[in-house]
Length: 449
Image (cartoon, rainbow, N blue to C red):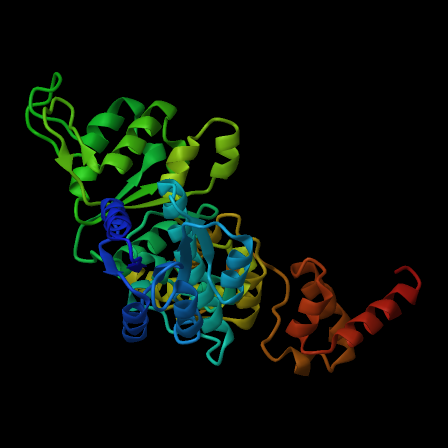
């Protein structure tokens, strides 16, 4: 994240710069007057600009008025020693994200910066998907994630922006939605892509081994410690530590994790001196950690540290438009690995895959496709290979449905597999929704229906 500090008070300027450096923000530039600040803003693309209002010559509001139209994706946070509601309203109307009164509370300032950067990422993603290009070009770092879904692309655009900042990111989503794959993309798009990526499943770690595995130990620290051992934090130094299922972290260790994140040092078991850390933390969970905090099962202050940015992955049932591409990818991958001749899916088989519920999400789809590749005896996966005995729906359903004797049977089949979603059934059958309504009304009038 690149930040510009503009303030004519030298002490205030340097103290905020020192605070931001301590918090891990490395790209922080300073300026002590409005005129030079405006030129810097024109020449550079700053993510967040902290702008003092009361300055001699060109004041902060004048800078904001000229700079915001030129840099719509930069977020401005206005600073002032005189808290005035009218000035605050004017600044917000001119495009400022926030308005802080001096002397500033450090936590309030840091939160404002993080939220401003988060807003920048969301705005960037939404505009890129809404204007001109319905399929935005994502960073190659996220090339492993297969999607055509708009909501998913917005999240990836946001993740790409946040990845560059180096701040901790929390990924939420149901099991099997691809949280670790996204974490790897964040690492590759981040400031240290050549550093190590260490992935740890917190829920799979025996509690008796937590401290040794995460914090490391020195030789002789306990019985059996015959050598020095670097814990996960040290292994991930100058890189990324991915903490999967972070919601399962035991309460007594949450305090220690918080201290490490705050102090950016670690003391291995049996060690005498702290080891400095430069680690990017990416966490993931399928739990609602806000609810866990209310139930006192998770520390609010730790969640605050882990959730500088939040990316949510939608379940596969909310992005059924991704199923064909995902299924094709998993089919080709499985066919190559198992040396099978499978080449494609029949239209009926694909329709069945698209309309499944997938409680296990993408992971379940991958396992299903691999199983089918192993059992099919043809180059084309059919509906029967998927355990479906019903007649298949051809891709050109409109042609088939012109024959009256087939229409009603196929209508019933499609309605069953779309959860009686009439609009979706009309799309699959290639007819209008009005035709579906008319046919169903006709069937209801028949005796015995």
